[in-house]
Length: 270
Image (cartoon, rainbow, N blue to C red; front, top):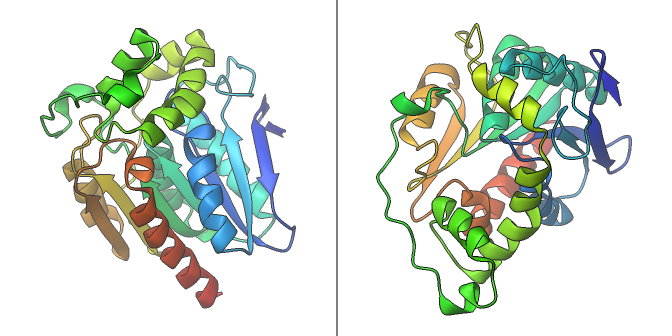
């Protein structure tokens, strides 16, 4: 679908009358980073019209010269929220970079956002100044390593904290294909202009849930806590012990319980 002059890939599930929820992927992956774990939650918590987005140059969305920075991505996200919400505030679910964009969208236009779920959100664009823990690479169990491509295992080891078969299957099915199909020029342009020109300063006054991995060596959890303190006065913040940047998969049962309860609270509030 065209948004702000560029084509965006959107998969929407659920009935038109359901409450809208928009999912924003990390960088440089695509909607698959959230779809599987979230759909299992919605199966137990119906009543949501779910839109999974691939921004230009990622997943099924074609690249576009107009997608050259996080500011461009945010402009597209705001257009998506307005269009997919169809006059009704939408819940935003953002993972990593998607969390960065979701938080900025909510702070800039809180009237468009009914609630916010940030999953291992990136809150500090500059890698060198992030407050991240030092985490030893995990041991890969023999059952996971058996028959696997050594390159795939090396990439998995770089991000995994829980290196079990379920997480590795998710990594191979949802993460690796997205990394390998992302448009290289888009990744280079956005990566060079990763920080928003005007980061949010006005708090988002609505309900929020922030889920971080205590052992996330990519974006950390302490920076996310600082952003929560500064910008989300009505947020629940959880740092999951023994979880990394894929906390929503590494501790999926806990993640599902927290997100499901949050969705139920939003639904009860109308």
